[in-house]
Image (cartoon, rainbow, N blue to C red; front, side, top):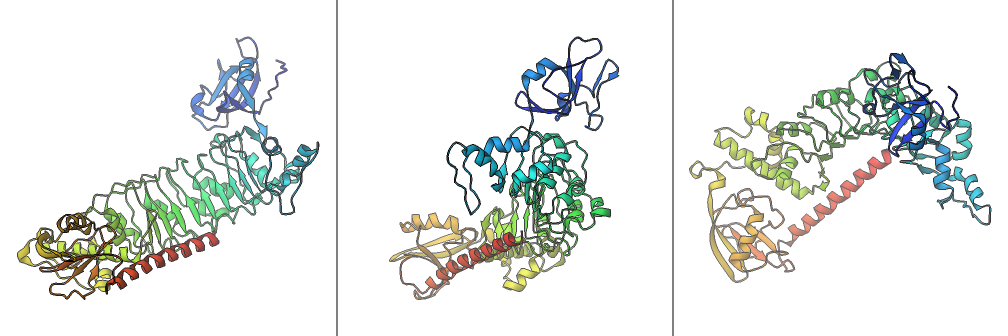
Length: 550
């Protein structure tokens, strides 16, 4: 059946401004009048068959069986409801030719009636291009693309209407300077068989294929030969397994430069699979696994992930503190994001304190800097708690049973020394009452308080009993009988620590004083400020190193 339709078989279409498909057939249908169009939807759930009608096959689908991604639509109805995907160059011209953009250093001045033509002539000055969301259905031939967009280094094609990897291949051949490519959420690529494209992208450093269904094996087939790639993002692709088969054959040495790998919001369940697949990548520094149903982390060898500095496992399903202990085995780990898991509440109730104490090398936790003073407090608190718990069980804190439950104990005992176990006649330290002298200027109050009381809970008591606002003031802990000139230990910034951990005993003095006063103890406050600054500078140095390496 002849047709004068504007549509052509092979066109990429956007129907009702939302649904993308490929036109596979134009013609008649047996037993039906008029012209019909056969389309293969990017979303197979919209289809009803694979191109058949009443036992006759009219076209084939590229989507793998058993999916039924095809539909027949009256041609006139389709024409009125669809837009035909344009070429990449047409989309760039439409978006950028009528706008100002940052030119190359030599600059261009646009004047007179020929301004638009001059802009078109200098699209090749654009280094960064985004046509995200545009109805781009095809990529121009390389001999057309190179002269028009030859300076392009960054290209964002998110949610365009491209329908094949061959289009992506033409990008590589037509944009020789391309270093950053975002081809995320292109539904037409989800079921297309992956060819080998890497050799066409010699400068590509950053590649995003989020929401395309591409797993690591397919990404290796597509881009494994692009040995310069340093950042790869495969977010939300339904990846269930990474495997190791992709490492052999022609793919040997793939991802040797990869520093950042983003696998968030997939379906990875096995840490063993992750470690076997990625643990030997020589340049991997940052791994994002958040939103995967990982329940257990068990690092088999300290030789794996030798350069991994940042790990994100937020929003997983980690269920026990043993998995957290395992992260201490990652010898280069400096940054950890582990929020929104299913870890049981620690005995102390302070999750951050527990995480810091169990993972000894990190300097950033859930986006927050860990100052040296905070680490020391957390580790002492943890050491005190484990020592007391061991004593209640009649065990030494270095007993094999304790070492299995708390792998860092030997290291912490070596660093801080052994802490005295609680006296047998006092029950647990959390139930011990101690007599303290609370003092602010001439005001003095004698008070029995539980040794388990934290500094955070002590502050409102001091305010009520001494009648002063403690915010902004120094709070100092002094041993029993110490003279007023004794510097003592500043405790106002140690909210999570208990009096017991801080060493308070019967007769100890808690002194509240103006922050601006001249005090012997001010040296400690200054040291803490210096610690915070040093930690911040160390973090900035690490971040700069990562950015330079990436």
